[in-house]
Length: 205
Image (cartoon, rainbow, N blue to C red; front, side, top):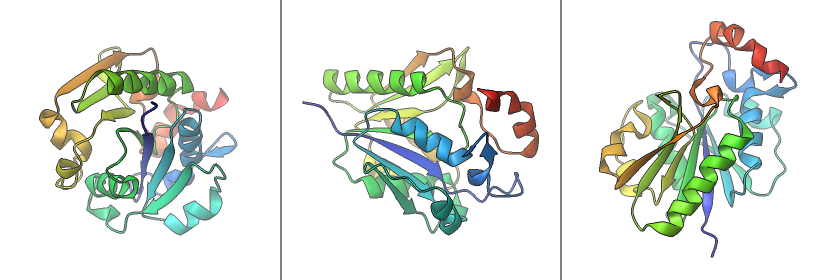
């Protein structure tokens, strides 16, 4: 039987280094966050949740998503760090979800092929083990995103603090698997206007 596998997109930050809401940065004809959402929609997730916080009303108004698998959730504590957005997302998904792929809203250049590859790896491991495992892509020795949690430890996630994201729980899992990929997008995030200029060539894809 197919396990429930969800996508969780973290996009609640204030974009202080960008100087404007980077979720609404235009890359080609799409907003950056919309591009990440479309990546998630390309895989067979049972549900997709995007966590927004700062600029949430504007983001939801400008990025309409009609796929029935998708929904928004708002993190009112977004300024307290990424861990609060991770927690808001996991609360929205509930404990019944066995697999969760976490994507970052400022990493729009990951390929659909990589999303599907990590999805398939996670789905396979779900059927092979009963433990909690994390799967991450590796690009030429650099660990990147998306991060796939097989049976995520909900209680530990809800105890995270600050801006550490999921790093604080990796040591508590039963296993950690790195999947080599030839996808530079897995290690590129856009935080500043300089980042946008540096990787602008990718908008031409």
